[in-house]
Amino acid sequence: MNEPQVWTLIAVFASIMLGVQQWSIGSLRREMLARFDRQDLRTDALESTMSTRFAAVDARFGDLESKMDARFAALDTKIDDRFDRSGELMEARFSDVGHRLGALESDMTLVKGHLIGQRSA
Image (cartoon, rainbow, N blue to C red; front, side, top):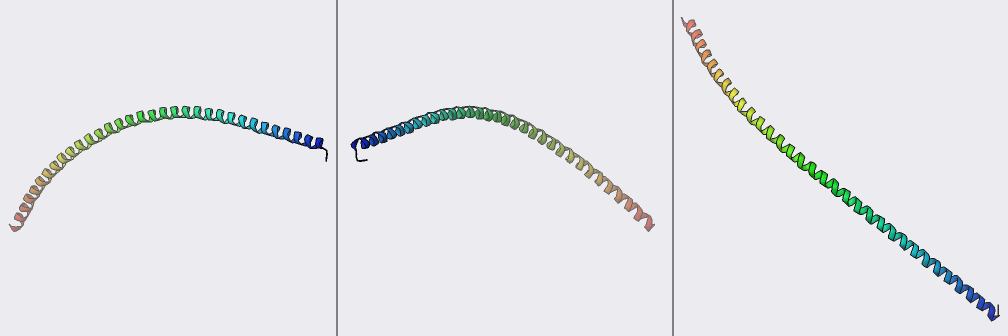
């Protein structure tokens, strides 16, 4: 171990090992960066595709929403028209019932007057 050649061989071997280790780490690093870049590209492509699809779904929902709004507006109009007509019809019927009750009341007054008049006689 005291010979300079042994120390030289140890230094050369250590240098070779460190060089191989550096090369391996550098190679691994480059490979990992390349894979990360490819994965980033895939993720970006997927994001673009999903954004396009979501935009299409949003457009569909927008169309459906406008159609449903139009249908609900038409339904509201129909319901309002029916309630307006029903209200008018009910007012006419109540008015007719009121007239009939008035006539019945006057008839009952006549009958009552007739019955009370017969008792006193």
